Length: 336
Image (tube, rainbow, N blue to C red; front, side):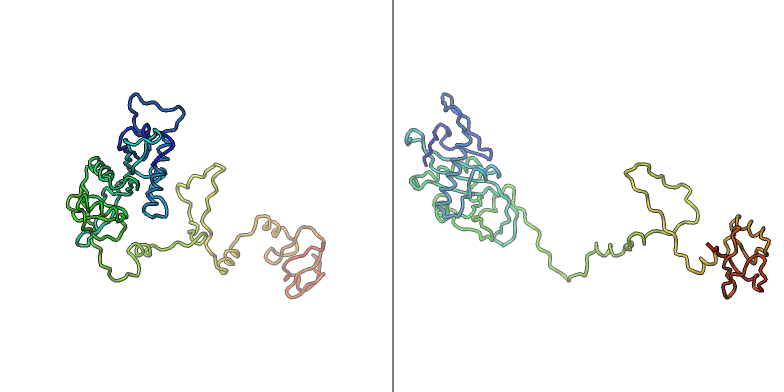
C-alpha cells in the first residue's frame, strides 16, 4: 500500500510496533523530515487505510481497526513495511497484525466454563499483491517472539478461512475447541495458560420459589410509621428537664411541637363548668342591687332593653319592673 508521504522515513524499522498512543517511533540519526509535518496524523492515516483494506478483504460491513479504536483500547498493532521497493521514493506498507488481551469465558473439553484473559488475534491482513511470499509468517513470528506466547495459547477473533489455513500450515493448529462466542481456541489452550484458567463455580440448582427474601421478612417486622401529623406523640403533662435548644438562624424552620390529644365532648363541658369566673365578673355580680349574684347578671349602665326570661322575651325587665318572672331572667341584651 502506497501513501502520499514518506513511509520509509516515518517507520524506520521493517516491523514497527504501535500502541494506543500512536506516537512516531524514534528516528534514525541522519534522517530529516520536512518542517510542519504532523507525524502522528500520518500514522493515523496509515492505520485507518489498513483497517479499511482488511475489512474489504474479509467482506466486513465496517472496519474493525481504526485510529480512534486504537486510542480507546489497549491494543498493539504490528506494521510491516516494504524495504526493497521504493515507488516514487516514499516506501510502501505490506500488512499489519493487531493483538490485545481480553477477558473471556470459554469452554474446555468437558464443557466447563473458564474465565481466562489470553492474548487475542484481533485483525490480520497482508496486501493481496504480496501474499504467499512469507510476509505473513514473518510478521506472525515476530509477534510471538515479542509477546512471548505459543501459537496454541492464542484466541482468534472471528478468523477467516485463510487465517485458519495459515495456522494449520505453519503451526499445526487444526483441532479446535467449540465455543459459544466468536473466538476460536485450539487444542492445548488450557495446558499452558499463564496465569492458569480460573474455573467458575457450578451453577446452583434452583429450589422452590420463596414468597419473599430474608431482607423482606426483616423489613416486615418493623412497624410502618404513619405520616405527619398522625405520628406525633401527645403533649406531655410536665415539660422536659432539659428542653432542646432552639435555633436562632433564619435558615432553619421551627420544629413542630406535639399535638394536643383529642378531648371528648363530655370532658370539655365538665372543664367549662369547673372553670372559675373572671375577677371582673365576680365584682359586677357582687355590686348588683337588683338581685343576688347567683340569680342574674347585668351589663354596664345601659338603658333597659329585651330581657330573656325563662320561656319568652319581654321589654318590661327594668330594675323596677313588677313582672313576676324577674328573678328568672338570664341576661340583658343591649337595645343598640
